[in-house]
Image (cartoon, rainbow, N blue to C red):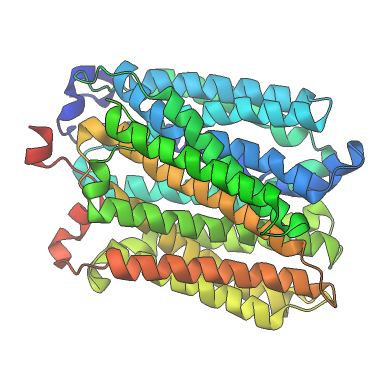
Length: 488
């Protein structure tokens, strides 16, 4: 049976092997690459945006990033449910269209407020297309081909996030608005390829509407916590304003939990969290992506303010790390799974490698530029850690998801990533605002914060995800497949 002619109603059965999967994976990877790229591509545009919109500090500009990430996180799960319900390819195309339109609006924004609003539109599109992309990959790629396909998908997502500063640095040299306009031709091509190459897939049995109010409460909870982290640096943790934000965040989070137990299609599916692997991977992902977001912004700010690199130079300085991600995700991590006894152990190793890389940078950081001997070794080692950790965390969380819950489960896993990124960026902004005796103190605080997040993620992996398995079962644990009792 040809892949392109697969019936939508066959979404609950295992797809047959074929030779057309490479093109499908490539199209689906474009979506996750674009969404991840735009999480961080604006980092190097901050100075240029600040110059055009005079008077905006790093805390204000951070909302250009945080607004995108918060809305992205809130939309993911309802969008995953909607994709399961109306058709995953239809949702993918719709998300690509909204994302591309939002990119156009970002490039035309006349002020920071308009830019934040346009980034919200972008985030809605990204939040729709990412879970549709992953659930399509898991639904239409045959079991024996999923290991390589999942590694490519997740690695390209990590690569997009890590290459954001690199590509952003080059585009800022032309003009910061090109950071957003570059998405227009890519988005149009992705839509045409998706319509032509990707088969439709849906869950015919799913009928409940997603909990949109729960998604709003989730966005408010994450945004209020991020706001508290940013404001705490100026007002103090004991101030009425910060305590009020944290209390409001707790109330919104409580509303999300309460609705999750009552709504037929909740933002957080309580049943999925009964899986030790799924809940552990989600918790570890929050911590790991907090480290990832803090590391990228901290490095960009250090290079542009202390070493006085131009945006392009800073982007090129970061580039060697991302270049390590794909080979380690595609070639090294899959071979380590049977050797170490499971994806959880590989994820823990990736967190440890990342922490060592940041520890090396903490020791070597210096006010005088010394890229080759000081920053480059940490970049290469850190990129290897990313390549080991990110696909392994995704594989651990995806293991055993029933086909009917692919959109929902993948949405929750991706939501964990975005929540972590928001918290990491907000925590870093607070850390950089703490005064010190020399220019390096704030950035050392940022590195220490990154290490703390990485160590915490590694501890979660060791405690929850390191159940030893037989080598022959490694691929089955790494990649999702329906269990008989779950699909009955």
